[in-house]
Length: 392
Image 1 (cartoon, one colour):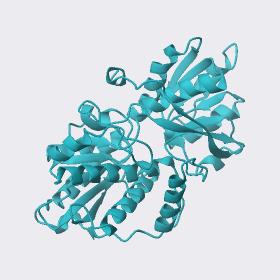
Image 2 (cartoon, one colour):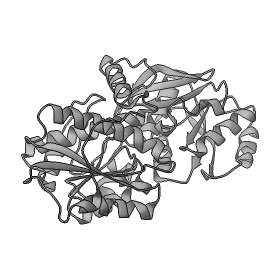
Image 3 (cartoon, helix red, strand yellow):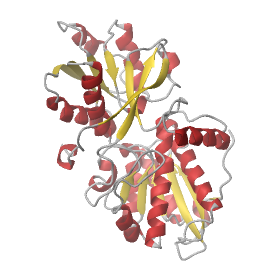
């Protein structure tokens, strides 16, 4: 695959950290180059490289070129901590970590201990920030709880759903966050009701017992709120449909993308929220233009909406650095926390001293019908989710 031309520095090559008073600014990626998290990290990292290249070609950041150092977390928490320390030792001014709280937090905590800003590529648990790492940690994506709340309210208002079954994969904080948002929204929907709930683990080969309980209901639920992610999501969805359950399946953004759909041929009545469409039908022409730029840079189309937060992350961090006039972590954090509906290519971003995430956002709704995904609607939840509710 064609790669962007960026200067890479080996983590051990520098004896002492370089900072903004040198002739370059260093961004360290402690992310997954191997293991299942690569499917999430790699597209977002490629998008981040595009924004870095744009900044460098426009004269750099604070008049300096951005250079990149990398270390592979191998989709392993212990290796994640080592990777974080590796890019810090290489002089990183910004530490970029994996697209999930559970797998990205070891590197983010290393950055926090070193007094550096960290950005999760696209993590969507509130813990991937102040609440779980510390005051210098951010995520460029939208909270998983907003995804669950969005799918509940949209399906109720636009699809007429009234009965819901909640099926939670307890494996990660991201999965729990989707269901937390659903739980927050459902009581606000007048005659909506939860007709059952169950749990499973991402690695479970079978969810036959859970499916039996769904089929034992007097009526098939209008919608199943499935709170899961790859790789186990494919098996769960396949088993639900193989059992003859035709309810709408709602999920979070973690299952966006067509790369897995061949495993569930002719999947229909399946809906997810996305920040931008990888299917060539985004209503914003600037997103379509970015998709073309991504293909030119990498040799392939974006595989998932998780591509986009990587671009946003570099964009907002670089704006904060320019406004602060330095890469000093506290000064950059102060500028980030002033951002209120800051325009980005993939929607506005707001950060506050209380929350380094988005607790309300416009989502496109993607429906998969006869195995083909595409945008069918858009939705913004009626109110931001309060931080107190996000922490439950």
